[in-house]
Amino acid sequence: MKRLLRAIGTALLVPLLLFEEWGWEPLARLVGRLARLPLWARLEAWVRGLPPWAALLAFGVPMLALVPVKLLALALFGRGHYATGLLLLGGAKLLGTAVLARLFQLVQPTLMRLAWFARWYPRWKAWKDAVLARVRESAPWRRVRAWRLGVRRWWRRAG
Image (cartoon, rainbow, N blue to C red):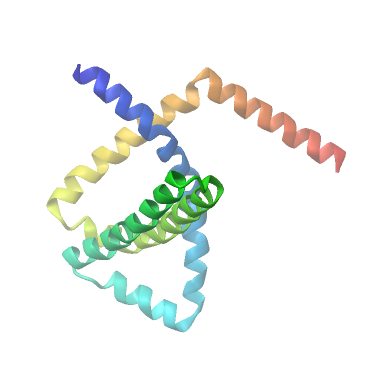
């Protein structure tokens, strides 16, 4: 039973992990460009200088702030406003990933000073990387990737 629940949980997390993996670095870079603005640069410097528990709060609060937005999207789905709910959910996911990715880049060194975080983060990362490696080695993933590369080549020749 435990193995079955773990497999189901992993299957449910894979789309989220793939989105995070795809968007994490590019979105963090995009938000990082805001550091060219003096006020934003000062804000980032302040976040980098936070003590460990404050850094954890700085990372966690934006995650919690998105919960009402996601609940609103669910309410929209419940009232039949599927497109609006989907747009809201997608926008919240993009914005949330962008902000959290950048915040994590800023606070990760500080968070690693928390013993429990330093112990569990590498385990989480290793598990996530193993799951994503299995997905990327799967036949459906390889077929979609080959198809996408073929479309890209065709587009370059056509343009």
